Image (cartoon, rainbow, N blue to C red; front, side):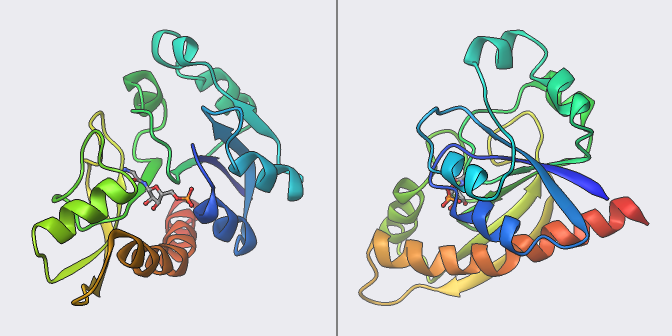
Length: 188
Ligand code: GAR
């Protein structure tokens, strides 16, 4: 069975749905950069080992490649992980690191574009639609080949909050499915 590591910095709602819907693969490790991240409770509730990583070791060491290899990780799934992925880790897992972003990339991505910053920028620009993007990870924030996008409309009285809820519903509906499809491709 293929083994997945989920990297998350925050609440971990995407990690939670991926764990709940996991079938045919194993969520073997939760990785976070924050010792108080909500995702740690989700890991312990589901008896999944977790790892709180250190900034210096992540960026100046070997990006925790040894620890990921020791856990036989096949695929890394970023779910609200806010640090850039270092080149050492990308080189060790080519085309095996994916990310989700709460907007239609290539627009509204990049450093500092997370959470409400994204949704407010979309509203400020009077866009008619937003959505989600799932993509492979390269050395830049929110860059890399796009695997999947889903769209939702923007309503007249939307706030960053109401738009965030609509976008999050798309994330929860589609991220587990896309992860399953990528695992299938790794297996076949
Ligand atoms: C998600 O909306 C995800 O798209 C976003 O962080 C949130 C994490 O929520 N990621 C980015 O903005 C990446 N640039 P969660 O902790 O509830 O899963």
